[in-house]
Amino acid sequence: MALRHRNTRTSVRTKAVVSRLRVSVNVKSGQVLCSSIADSDGVCKLAKSTINNPVIGVAEKNANQGNLVTAFQSGVCDVSLASPATTSDVGKSVYLSSVDGLATIVPPTESGNSVIHIGYVMTEGNPAFILLDMFHVVHIN
Image (tube, rainbow, N blue to C red; front, side, top):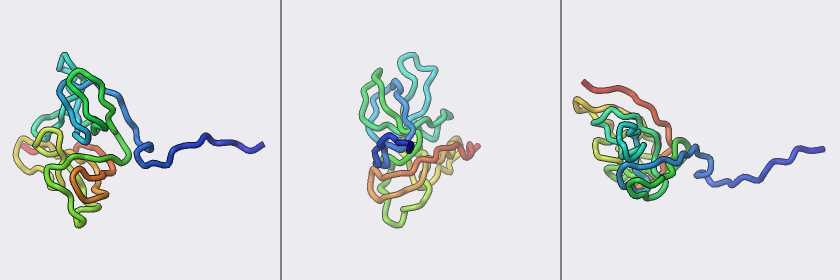
């Protein structure tokens, strides 16, 4: 008797780890999120490199304050960038920007910022398809 596998969708987006999180602010699709356990009205908010909160995902869709949002935590998804990615940016690393919820191809260098790797550029544009690979690199003193 042969083993039978369930059919799975082949979309790249379905190969991602996702979570449903309550947001403490309004978020838009493609914005980078961080934890905000201290906030009484949510568990995540928009991430930026000038605060020391861990990045926890990228919003799949728009969500209003207090509602749930689906957040990609791995895989490939659209990510909003501070500046559009060009064809020469494909394959480059993407980092958390100092602007709320946005990513950038140029890592922050100013004192007081954290360099947080978001992933790698897969397509040009804004938002751009990003292969997620999130980790904290360094805090700049």
